[in-house]
Length: 501
Image 1 (cartoon, one colour):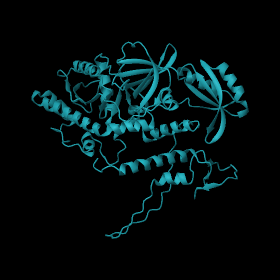
Image 2 (cartoon, rainbow, N blue to C red; image 1 turned 60 degrees about the vertical axis):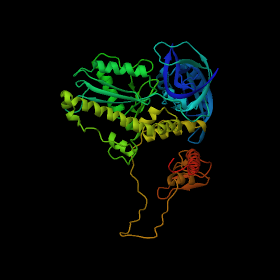
Image 3 (cartoon, rainbow, N blue to C red; image 1 turned 90 degrees about the vertical axis):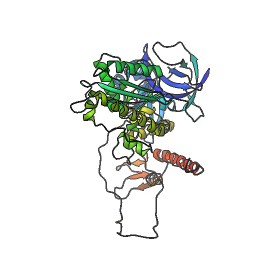
Image 4 (cartoon, rainbow, N blue to C red; image 1 turned 120 degrees about the vertical axis):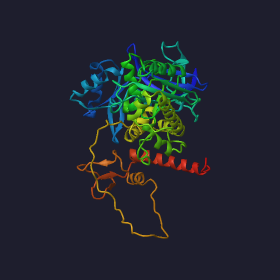
């Protein structure tokens, strides 16, 4: 049968030696579902030094590598050049590293590709599945998996296909903030207990969990029980990736409590780009979301709230970190500390109301889960967008290499003339850098090496004398033209709307 679902989260598991992709989502009736896809095999490419050796190398690898399901020879583009490569499918991704090391020792091999891409992330780009978007998939219903908290369980019989629907389903969202005890320096989870956790749901339910004097065991237990009971799709905090969740996890360990927040009953864990993964749920840290907004100079919770137009950002009482223990130890002042925590959670709620739709759209555009995309630096976001496009154009994805920073000479800047001026004309370039890249076909696959001889038409960069082929259109040019055209369409549609909408 076919079902339509909205993609929430993804993780990877190996069950009985078979890798599986687990897609967590919501169907059109609002049920929480888990779709298990066992159809996607992990793979990597092997690029031979000599194209004439490709067939020989394919047969050799099929015999020598561990857990090989199949191999095949394909033609791909690598920096614009047509190459023959061996595609090696494995039984599971756990032997990937061992096999790649074995392959690289072979004198016939130039390099391996795609082995550095995370299995679940490769699934998303290879299958063209986009998080925070609607899909349709052919499935078979299966029995519930023990300790997994969803309404329905399915096994995928086909790959998910995009389904034309824009609005996300009604999600259950939990906002939280916490305050920690400290008398000396910053709070230390090995020493200082959690004093208060305040929660607020998008359904309006408020909860406060407080320590019993300096004992936070019941607080942590009650918080975990409440999260599992409310069963949120999205958990939102401020500085939760670097502070709150790691702190709560460590305090739980000190109290011999399992901090089981995810939909499999497991504990959150630090994953790619430093985000804390809560399997089956999205963990959104608002501090990561606003990290790239230069207008917010000092990114405190109050400053961020003010930037997004939240009224009443001033706390009921301003309590500095070094004063927390004084307020907690004084029964008459303790309630002020609790009110501050509730105020912080309310600010988190109001900020999230302004940014969550943007986060979902960015996740869908880039093609990685929303909690990944918040924590990832802009460069990583661009990488994943380009990786997805590269696969659609038949390009192999080169390994990411950290590049040192090289200073460069800036453009000409005209000195302003002091004074007041009239009749000012403004000249602005629309998408100046992308336009230059498109005009001169600047792209890694059009670059001509200094010692390479060519008779084709080229563009020569002034001063540095780098050469770029004028034809055919490079990878960057194709991607940029598509983005620029999409941008124009969006701007045209926005002109039809009221500025106050």
